[in-house]
Length: 464
Image (cartoon, rainbow, N blue to C red; front, side, top):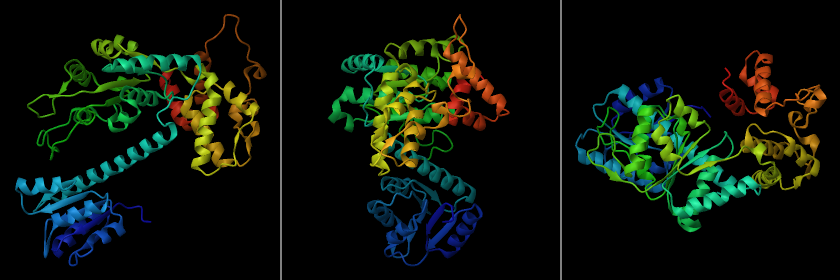
């Protein structure tokens, strides 16, 4: 394995193949080319597993469009970039309709070609990652809520009423790792019923993951030529989610300019693509999630007051795992069943009662995600029929040289006036940072939590 991204180049002009191959190899790509024999070309492409295919439109003896059609029909998922000397719109339209990812007109600019290839390969990698995460999420949770605690039963009751009313927007808050997306999918399923929800779109977008200028295009789409890189028209997630549900994750990170445009969509139920002349009606349920305190963000001017009130008409707060301890054994057993099947470790049957009590007594700052990660680790590393206390990590059992032993054993005395758990947790984060010389990875290990959980704590308590 070379680790390099691979390009399959198909062109009967050997000079062009030589020039392109050298240019791409200079950028660190591995290149395989075909200049003469185009018979069974899809077999050659499939055997090479390229990250992208460069395909000339006019080949001796056959059309590049015919090869493009074969590639798409064969199920090869490598994006195809057409190379054409014909700059008419008709050729481009044909290529795009057949599934081309993009096209370049000869004579083409080498630097532009490099940018196009890089962008397309990056999009493919992101799409594969999203597909994998969606598949894992679907396998793991099956869109059901695990829990029988009072707070979860109350939440389920609220969600049932909201779903029956077919409301248009919902705000869900909660700490990182509490399962806000899972609850969003649960709402989607209840709104449309088990059968229909499978055919209704559920589109999720992370508002913190993209810069503002790209976020607007992702949300609302754009017309061809709307800006420099807009070579084709693009549907935004509101169009893609039409008739179903759109999840705006981390809505608190959305910039004010986009907040005003989102408010308009919520009020008028219509969108306009960037560069577009017409409004399009959209019928979507908008679910916004955040781990921020939006009330505080409104006070500081980071979040629009009118958008906050529009979103929070129907509001759900997902409690942290430490506030639904009755559900910890149920969740642990659920994850155990899932991972023993996934890793073919069915010899592991259960947690023993003492191990379950230790799970319940732990505070779980990383919430359900942290519990899930721990169970996966135990399934992979252990082989006994029952998972016992000695199989649990020291930071959870309190057996590690007093580092995470129960507070009473370390000489900690609860003040008579009391103290909040948040204050205690913040103090532990500060101590861990100092002891680790402000290395966050090391500090997370000292506390026995994941790096993501540690980063959340840093953000939560305003530390650096």
